[in-house]
Length: 180
Image 1 (cartoon, rainbow, N blue to C red):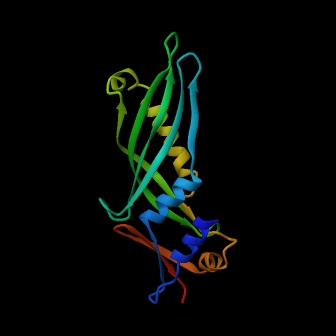
Image 2: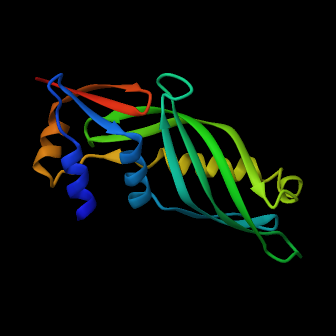
Image 3: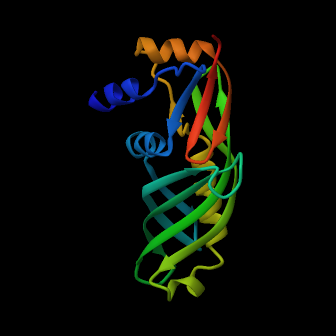
């Protein structure tokens, strides 16, 4: 409730007709609404439980019109005839933002893996063959959930949703353009 109030107060139409959504607001929304806990398995080959608990979004910092998503979390990997392996996964993706007017939501799509690391480092070689499968699953889960969504129950955000005509990115800010 308090976070909705804070987000509602932070979203207001500037005199130039723009609503700014900062990286911090995206990070807060993602932390509250996107829980990336997933079980992946290929029977007889492996199973993995992944919990990405720390997600950060950077807007137009490296490339204009691109967001960078950094995620970190824990995983447990089980291979046949071996004890489960605990590890930490950090991954960095680039993605393209899209505004879905019918939902009042910002999605990140067309994810591309930039790099990843595993800890302990000894896991890097052991699970290298499995990582594309796990990271592809993570990418599709991120793309299927909004990175930010306007609240239909908040009158100000409902008005914004009905009046947004386009968006643009500037370093650190997603600017939603409204009809005057």
